[in-house]
Length: 260
Image (cartoon, rainbow, N blue to C red; front, side, top):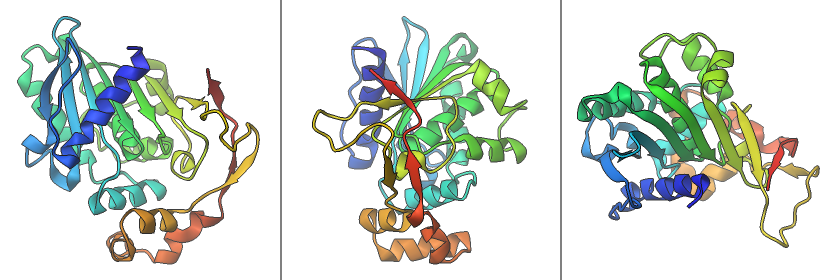
């Protein structure tokens, strides 16, 4: 498998936490731990699997995206450029990973994730960096754009250790998002690192350079969960549903690199 196929494989398996399906890693890899095995890591419906390859001395953290109401709350936080509640779960999960490997600083770390999981992947990468661990890259899919979220997290000093700046992070870590045809999810915020457009299937009604209207956060939540959760999200954040609807009028163009 190519590198990108490995990451998609791991991300798909992270979703198995929600569906309670078994997680069987590819050859050479083992499941080191999974977030649903820990009450602290599982808080806020955090869905992540740590895979380990002893021969390569590598650990990959794979994050699932939105599957329930807890996730939609964090989606709304991200739209508002706030740090998602799952940052605490990320830190607890990495604590567990470090406790399970006695020589944690000798491993190479990578992170991956899809959609909301892409934001969590980038946050996990920065947290690993803040701990002085050897994090090399965060490879994500349909990432909503983590730049403002990471900036807020740095400004609020939420990471375990000191982070100098986003510019330094982009020099030290390869943040690379593979996004499909631009839509509401993968264009919410400014991206971090490199964004590559994965060419849509042959026959797709899409041309590079065209503008496409956003679905909007409200429509997204209603389609995913329902009106009760939308009201719950607005209540928790202390804002009106009209604020959540501001993205309904967004338009965007595909000013990103084609991945061939």
